[in-house]
Image 1 (cartoon, rainbow, N blue to C red):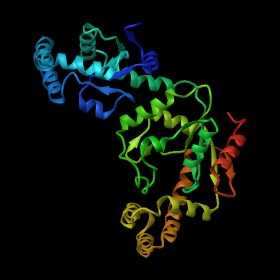
Image 2 (cartoon, rainbow, N blue to C red; image 1 turned 180 degrees about the vertical axis):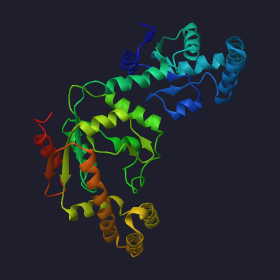
Image 3 (cartoon, one colour; image 1 turned 120 degrees about the horizontal axis):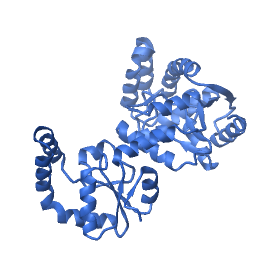
Image 4 (spheres, rainbow, N blue to C red; image 1 turned 60 degrees about the horizontal axis):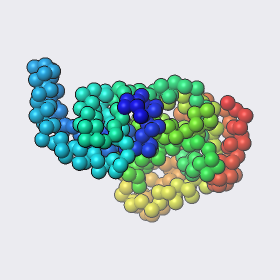
Length: 341
């Protein structure tokens, strides 16, 4: 077994082992390889002290201070790593594959544990996604007005054994002013990109990858610019369904949320919706007429998204569905775009 691996082999082989990230808790919280466990060599505070000494007094002084921090914790590192590994091989990394992961690897190997290092560390892992995006990829984009059921169509595509990148699902946000309702807390942008990267690792990159025509940012997180550029150049099917179906779908999706939450969302689009329409929408909500409020919001989104689609996307197909049937629509979309590469 190799003791050091580049990101591609490291991630592939680590599926049968356990990934241990020895960076600080703050670094790990900012973003980490999906599924990795955190066993920090230094606390956040300790890393600041060591880093400051390295800059001001040099490597030797910093290393001695680091050893002083690590020494009392060595036995606990071994116990914790053994428990984390549960008999499996440990795949270990720090930020750049340097002293932190090298030191922990030496300690765990001395204790008899099988350890593999990630060459180049977490930084190399992050860069490997950009290399992946530089390969020839066949993306297929689905877009259309709010309430067309695009998310459910993506789910139907998965049932039909297609490869799907659910950007909104990974972002924990549905993209609009109402998009945070009912969602988990959003990840950091760094973790969001790692989540996308992790999903790409499950794909056969020689086959099509379906995704929704999202903006560069979804809520407070942003995708890699390289991915967004690929999406804008990809073939795009523009979907429409009857307005009544859209209102019914949105009512089912958002109608159960507390009225104050819906009002707050309306206020977030007041600048573009206009004072009078916002006031009217809020009045409808307070009166319990959610459908009428939705209709007002749809006019705003249709106007804004219509311009966005025409300017941003490479629209190659248009599909007008007669009803809200995600599986039927997904099947029609596959057939429609079958010969378009």
